[in-house]
Length: 274
Image (cartoon, rainbow, N blue to C red; front, side):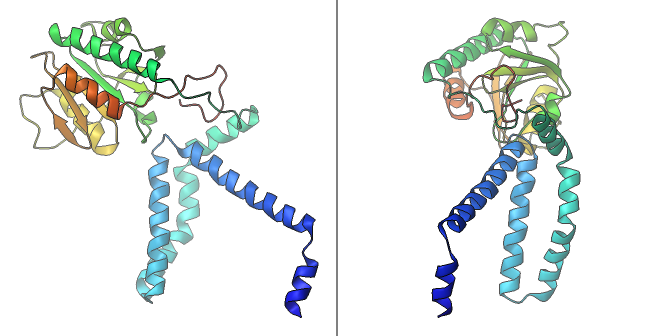
């Protein structure tokens, strides 16, 4: 009888309201994840999920002390989230105030554009390697490089071999430091990167190589280094340094590690890559 009464009380309007309620909740979660994507905050979100999973497991096996520890972490977690995610939350509120929260990027770049940009990159590296012009080029992937972008000179320019080469010409204002590539744009030049303390790096390698390894230790970025002493080309990824690669190998690695994002729309919204 109670079951019959339950279904009698369920109306079409109630069902629609429940569905809309769920869709709103899921969309808000989607917006929050998109706000965090491209920053280090996304890594912290993954850590929170691991804590929740750990808490569930410890509670299932009746591990009292471990469960209390997880409960304490979660109890203070909300305050920590506000402190840690403060820049992202502030940016989201600013975008909401400008009415640009729900704007999105255009269609994905075509394969033709990817090939063109990769060709420009290889061409510039070939030129610099032949003339022993030192270069340090970082390609942003899933982990955002905003902290390092802010240390450099904003460029936000289209990728061409001529611009790439001119930035690294010796004794010019932007040649010292790292260039950071975000999708199909040069985001910044002369950026500072963390230096690696690894003892595995050969002593004859300079600051560029240590910086390339350093950024690969704390992010998933892919980095290309041209040595000004030898003209050799090296790459780093996942804390690993690979030296003296050929241009053909570089081209294949760029196909794997360089993701071309769609071009930014003028006045783009919150979810445009920055």
